[in-house]
Image (tube, rainbow, N blue to C red):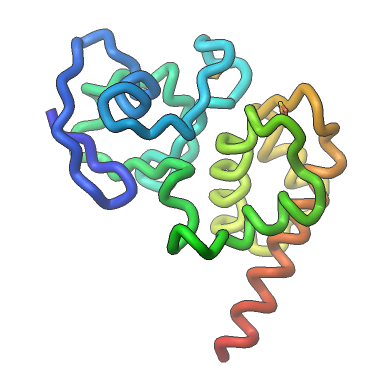
Length: 159
Ligand code: FES
Ligand code: FES
């Protein structure tokens, strides 16, 4: 089957039971998608499917033929320029070991596209399905708020 990931079509060979996470990691070589619990609890495996955050451990690869999949590898516009959400997590200490971070970033990115100026309560609510065992969630909330202000500044500069 074909998987469209970050705008590139990959021909992959999967079984009916292969999860999207496994297909991305093993067939496409995109190992930025993390596998933690593998049963839908931790959110580490979050990717975007047609711009919606989804748990790739719970989705079969074969269910996504024809969909546009976004992974952490496609978040930055170029290999040398981080996306605002990545810069913000780095500056506001929204990560430590980084295991949860790809899922966190993609979930946060989709929030900011939906709501460019989210309150702390909205951020906590939107991100509640992404678990981090080392950072503490305050820094993650601050990172998302910082990203929102960075995006706004970038837009004002472009106007
Ligand atoms: S690995 Fe998919 S939700 Fe934990
Ligand atoms: S940064 Fe380590 S699990 Fe979140």
